[in-house]
Image 1 (cartoon, rainbow, N blue to C red):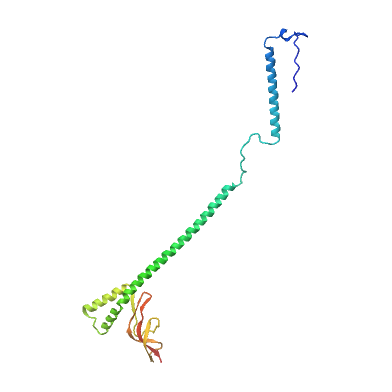
Image 2: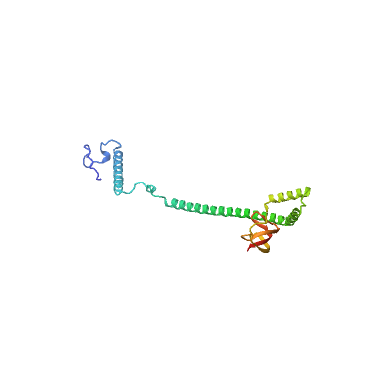
Length: 221
């Protein structure tokens, strides 16, 4: 910006000294202030032109943190979420496996406990079988009468509550898994191997065979 020409003072004559003119006091100060104002206007114009050029170039005037575009997933958060989901699935599978193993363990323990109890009961009942054989022989001879017969019946009933059952009667079909044949004969009265005589009855505890029945077998002719 060029300096504007200043109009000559009508009262100033050529060759006169400024101090000797009729200019009021403080004129030099006014001129200095006007110069400062003009310099400030020049600086403001330059700053304004610089700002306009920067704005026209598309560059941001004020620095601001960049924001992610709408709808774009945050990569670190998504990766962490996937890792947590994978860990949760793995822990769930571990829990299911441990639960299944514990359930199988409980079933095995219950089965073993029942088996041990059945074996212990079977051992006690097996020890009492000779007494039951003596009672059977006494019954065949008609000796189970009076108080003795009552005690024998009570003992048989009590043992039956533990699951003891007796088998082996004359006329039963011969079963090699339940009968022990000590004699064989032929007979026209039978159509299949049949127990014709029972020397000793057999006993079983539930499905477990404690002792086979000792019998004589007749085969068809």
